[in-house]
Length: 253
Image (cartoon, helix red, strand yellow):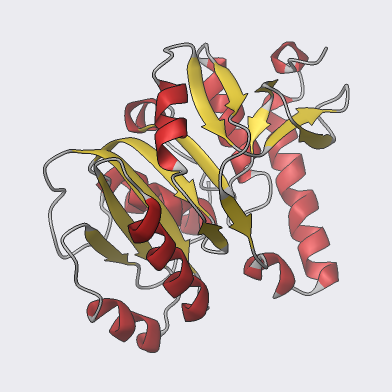
C-alpha cells in the first residue's frame, strides 16, 4: 500500500466534519461534490422537494473550491450537513467519509448530476426491507457472460447497481469497509462495492420507474478522453484483481 492510499484509509475513520454524527435518521441521501455548484443546487432543491421519508442530506465537499465552501456555509438547514475534505481525497475515500458520518440506517448515494422528479427514496427503502436485498437502485448492470464487460440490465436481479443512484444499509457498507479506496476515479467503484456487498450473501435489485433525471456526468465530461480511458482501464484491472475468479456472482450465467 502506498502512502497516499494509507492516508485515505485513515480518512474513512476520521471524516473531517465540524459536527459529531447526529441522532439517527431513517435515510441519509449522500452526494460528493467535485465542483459545479449549479449541479449541487439542483440536486439539493430536488432532494428537499421530493424526499418524503425521514432523511438528512449529507454533502461531502471534495472540491477544494472556497466559493463552493462559502455557498454551502450559507445553506444552513435542519436536515442538511456538510463534510469538507481538505485536501481533497479520491472518489471512493470521499464517499466513505460520508458513509462513516451518515446518520441514516439506509444510505442513498447520488451523483450530483441526478435530479429527483418525485419520491425516489421510499421505493428504495421498501426494496431494502427484504433482508435478501443488499443494494438497490434504478440502473442495473449484468456481466456479458464475463467479469470483464458489463452492460445495462433492467433486472430485476442484477450483478451491480450503478452509482448514479444506489441504496444500501449503512451497517452492510461498514461491514465491508465501504468503497475500495484504490478507486480514486469513480469508474467501476460502484460495481466493486456491489460485488463486495453481494459476496456476503444477498441480491442487487433494480427498482424500475423511479422519477429522476440524469444530467451531464461532470467527472466523465471534464476528463480528457485519453485520460478517462486510462483511468477506467486501471479500475477495471483493480476490479478483476479481486473478482476475476468469482463468476459464480454473475446472476445471468
